[in-house]
Length: 346
Image 1 (cartoon, rainbow, N blue to C red):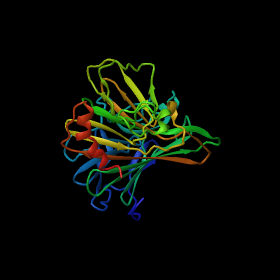
Image 2 (image 1 turned 90 degrees about the vertical axis):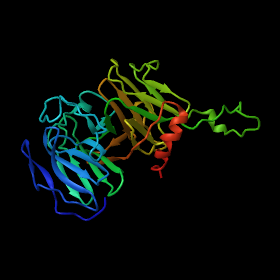
Image 3 (image 1 turned 180 degrees about the horizontal axis):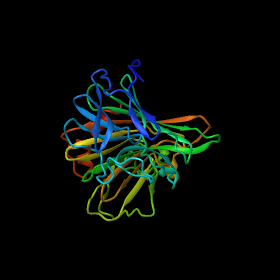
Image 4 (image 1 turned 180 degrees about the vertical axis):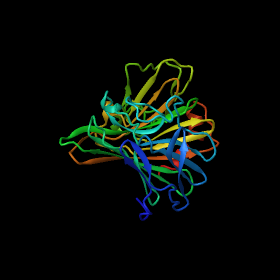
């Protein structure tokens, strides 16, 4: 975290209601932070730098409900039937970006996050802290930092075990993208079969006798569904509002990124793969899911046996680019998406 403490500005819990400590949050280093009403919720926090803005909810969460270019459409999905609701007895999806526990299980992963959260600003960091989940003893936090210029957002997701016993889990960050776009995931770099070079005299690395990736399918994954495009370099999943059946896929993503392209705007999520660690769901560090309403870009951290009182963190970096167009071919993605990705991977 950067910066010294500014006068604390918080949405504090008082019984079942959120009480606003200070009406306006403080600007910090070119980033304007303010309390706003959004989507039916009266207590939201907007962070903007003139290029992009994001909105986090404090009446529910922790959750980032909006991220997009300033004054333009939200890249994230918003559920029109659930926006503005609070104090639900059952889990509501809402839309936006949230933090979960992996592996997925009901009811453990589906604790209703529709209660108020504590929101505080520390320098350029917005911190959203959920009350301890009563069904599993885990407390969720998301720290959000928006750069003073450009589109970069850094998110630190934190799970804390308040139980008297260890809990086995992995942090799971899910970003729900709006409809009518397409997700792009990189494949691992191609290499010829060690015994059959593509060209005479080509030097072959013998390590490629071994597999280089996990590709994980669910029982309802249909690889013949036209929303999938399996190229030589990339895997594409398209969001189709007319498609009736959900699709899901997971992969061990050592290229450290996934992207979503919609209406000329490109969202890039960066998450660093940790070699030697055990990932959930047969080795997935990235997953994607779609139905008729939305598409999810999901990142996962390694499995951990979280000791009582201990915490685990999971970092994502977001970037947004304008005026990007690409078809479904490797050549088009190489020319139009890959340079944008490479510009933020250092």
